[in-house]
Image (cartoon, rainbow, N blue to C red; front, side):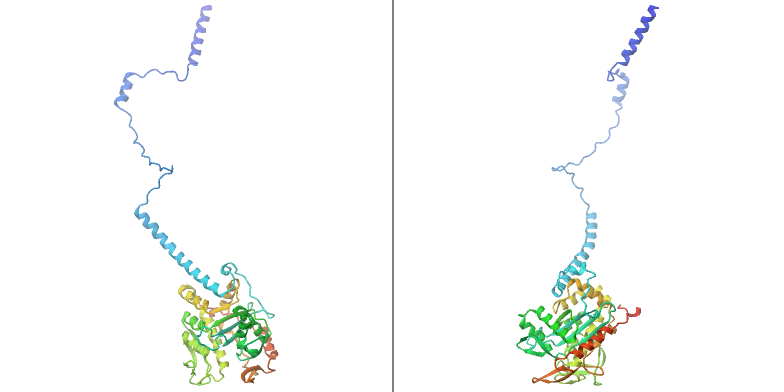
Length: 416
């Protein structure tokens, strides 16, 4: 019994020794045959992985592009970038030109899309358009306003009216100048230029105030143009179609400008449009028996024809023509319309039905509001009620502006 106990304890010790052997105990060597097999038949080795040498700054070198890939990328960039560059050039040209004409930051044109135009007591926006011959070298009266016109627009109804102011209408000037204390309204601008030290903006604003006084309504804006704009803008538009009216069956002929046109629709180029804007049979001719009054009506017809041609949408897709129009405007127009207001003005212009523009006149109708006569040795135009009594004219404007409503553009008459 004791012998059995000792044998059993020996087995337990052996088992404990086996468990306590270290894991990294040396394994029995393989047999010689196994080692010989691996020596004679070594395992296939994977080819070494070729590693790119790193650059000195520790970054991986970029993979070189093939010639074909370079050509493809260059072609794509060219196709994309050339229109972008052209657009930038045109935009730069456009904003530069607009900056010459309109007040304010050119970027306001893009960012201000809902700037409303100023309005008078009748809810209308009024613009004084006056033309000079300051671009005509050697002209003795270059700063005299040869054409004076008011364009009035109702922003809600789109009703639009045009009124020509007789250039010989007698007025009192705000301040005395070399012309005197009073004189013809066409000298208001040149008189204001003297009293404001040659400041064109101040003189234009003074001119607008004087016209406001005559009409009895606020003139918020002005646009001073020289005669070159008529020629250049007409040419930029590709010519205009003007309906010529005449009291002579032969049409009209003006000795001073050498213009000869038959009655009816005529397609005019820039030079012909400029001649028509000046023609009044002052040196002889036929068809313009009312002289200045006929000239004023023809000037209105020219502006209507320009507005109608300019609203044709196809012009938008001809960038060269657009730039040509901008050049003709930029070199020949000054205005107090701001860049922020320009967007609204252009949108409004596109909504105006040219055929529905009302032409107002102080000389037509059952009873003319002005008459011609002599005063201080000059041939002048004066109100029927008195030399400087404009109350009749103001009542006519009140009635015209408060009741004028334009019919909307019919669907088949929208500008193409």
